[in-house]
Image (tube, rainbow, N blue to C red):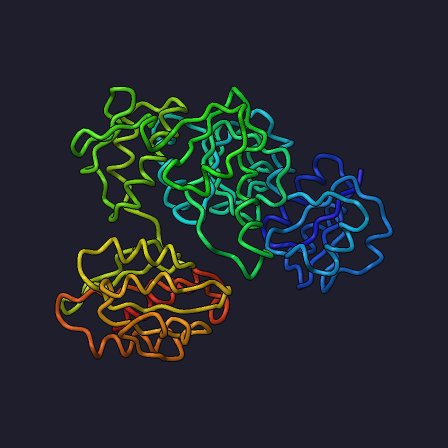
Length: 430
């Protein structure tokens, strides 16, 4: 059996090691230098870096795996598809070798990382042998390679990962929301939304799908009549509110007073995580304990510090308009906003309705001019450093400086984590 892995990174490395262990003859190809090349070659794995040569297409493969960051429109991938191959994501292929694992999967445009992190904390309170992976933490291929007998896998799934998934069958799954994003990658919004529906395509009567009835796009596109559907909102919702308490089938699931994270969106995220945990068998007391101990996720409306009576928040994970809107709604006063970055060809027009939430905006990056058009009080600068410098000059006691870019980071940073860490370093050096 032969396998071709297109794109290295950490997931490519462990996909190669896993398939090699399972008896495949493996070739890994990457446009860039593969730093772990020798480590694979000693196991008789062929590594071709510096490009994807055409002669690779002269061989028949039993499985082809693509890194989700590589677009389907790239010439080599188009050539592979032209030969009639199905291109898989490493998650789908890796889980072939961990068939007994319970998968709890979450996708959506916003809120994924906070929700899966909460769910992971809740399940870990009661069960051992629980792992977190996908678009967060460790690559699934690495988890399966190192822990083939894991009991529970909690997955955050991006649309890029879902595009290459054909066999995934989560025990419990949900789509949190659907908002405009990634139009630099997809042909149109419809293609992006459709990719998200793959999360539940293989679920059946033995599985649960939590349906967010408050999101009309999700309701409109939902098309699985086999899975057990649990309604999160509306008259058929399984959750009810009793003052500050969230109830499930008459029992206390958690109290809003237990939360250490701000914003109504985080109440919603907690409701989803708690419901998934309860459906999986986690005791409410363990759910409540996990919530009380959860202080949020790095780069998601993360409090950095307070200096000279000015509070600084890092929301670098806000890579689209909806995330910025959520961040602005989380505060009970207008903020000094730092925003901008890589242009994903999305509209910022919805932000006009949030001018009352913004005392002053300092906009930068590729999108600076577009953002300047929607904020009544905006100053255009070149970089994040400049934005913070100007904001500090204008800030007064009791102000909040919020870094919530509404854009991807690729114009000036490696990723949103790199950008968020850089912002925190800037703030701490003041």
